[in-house]
Length: 101
Image (cartoon, rainbow, N blue to C red; front, side):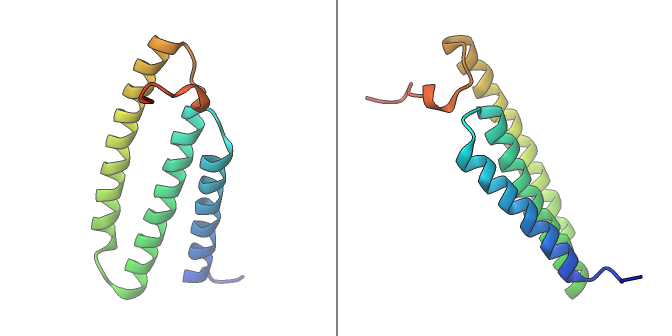
């Protein structure tokens, strides 16, 4: 049986990060884009906790702050999304042109 090392965690975090970036860059649905941003933040959290375990730092504290920030971002993002949907009746990113001159 192979022991799980730091490299395994970093590979999983890199996969989550790449999946999140691809989702942000390729999807047009705002809900999918927000979920992809959450994947990116989870990859950062995984790296923080992994290197905290490796070096004995306080990465868990930083991970809690990132989780709190992600929850606030999700609440604000979904609030904006609901307001946008009530006005335009779509969640397509291409339709978001309310702030154009």
